[in-house]
Length: 222
Image (cartoon, rainbow, N blue to C red; front, side, top):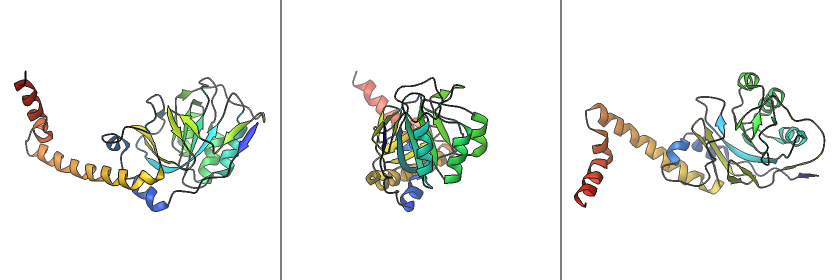
């Protein structure tokens, strides 16, 4: 059976332009929910994306729902695919990646396998997955779900959520959290430049970070 819901409203471009400047690993200093598990890894280096989540639940070996999703996707959307636990069958390859490129898709995240790595890199749409497989889905018309709540990398993803991803990790958050999280991360990234300057000037890292005092206090309390 197919469940085909409408697309969520796209996140405002200004919010995405702000969010993509923030590093997931910096947000990880103060936010502890919404990060997908480390088993889902980037196939591209030095690429960061931010976009609107459009979700797919894709059981088994029927790839029809992914084809449908690519046909619906807008520029700036991030396709998030829940493979319902399947790790053996690649859910997409080069042709789907090329279609995603033509649609302006910002990225594709698969809680499962993909294929055609060379073509994926050639076509340039960043892809994250749990691995690679030469066994591929078929167009069978058996069913799937589009724009429903899904689970990806151990995280609940709702259509319309904000996605921020690079080679260090993947973060999903409600769009209402974009401004606060991004601005806090950008301030931390700016502050780090001051830390690097102090290191160049000869200061010791644990002194700058306050670690020396923390350890000293702990030792004195023994």
